[in-house]
Image 1: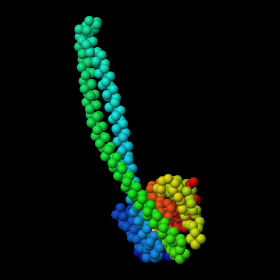
Image 2: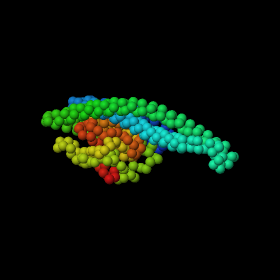
Image 3: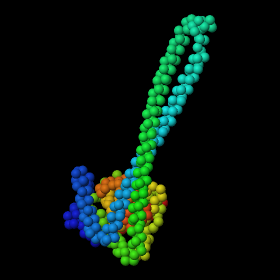
Image 4: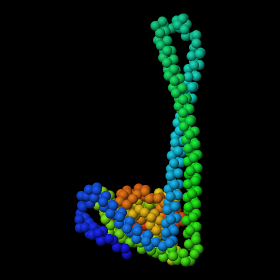
Length: 383
């Protein structure tokens, strides 16, 4: 069992002695100092973990770092492509609206021109007078005709302006289409790079599975990882941060037991609590989930991030402290979106499920810990 430095234990004892409202009296600077101390403690713990890493885990970490970079590049390329695609669609809608307006203006001007041509020579003042129109109405009708001509001039100017706007819009649309093609090529290249990296990692796992000696070495290292995770969670339970002081505005997480949301909104459990993935592997202290559709991993309850980093066979892992001794663990991610000390709300995006750690498929490893003891997530999360 790993031991915390003496100074950390002293600070924890001091925190317990002044737990009643002490956190609320701290300044922002003091709170930031506590977060900094928490990060330093985790860095020391992680350094001790890495010092115990075997050769396979070091190779795994290297593969995972390449995988994370490729995954991030693919996500950025996907976002860029979607942004340009949205701009192209918006420009196309603007073009359709302008084309409809231009067509309506042209039809209106054509109708008025035809009507004016039909009236040509028929409504001179003499003809109006002979036709029985009162003399005092003739200037009024001439004013109406003058008003109509002014309105037509405005319509013609508007039509010319719309035609110029349409020409500029067509130029921008052509440029954006070129950008869309380039974004598509970059997206395809990023996806191919990610597939190559995934293939390299799967080849590594197949090589280990085919070698009895390497399989035994991996199983030993996995057992080390299990112990390291227990040490980490034990350290977090005794850590410097106390989320219950800040979670007073939320319903206690224990009051939501059985009704919390799952971290994957449309995921399915592929390995249940207590299952043994392989004959010589330790039993799962959580569940493995496969996403269906979105890969976004969301917080099951409000809390504070206590760990966010690579953790051996678990890959990119995040731990959230929900107060009252309840922790949630999210592992095998390809991306993490928060750091140690950050506060998250229920349903907020934490990570993207992925392939890091000892996983060749897109998976999320999910645990719930009650005062350090693993419990079946089904007891906490609703259907």
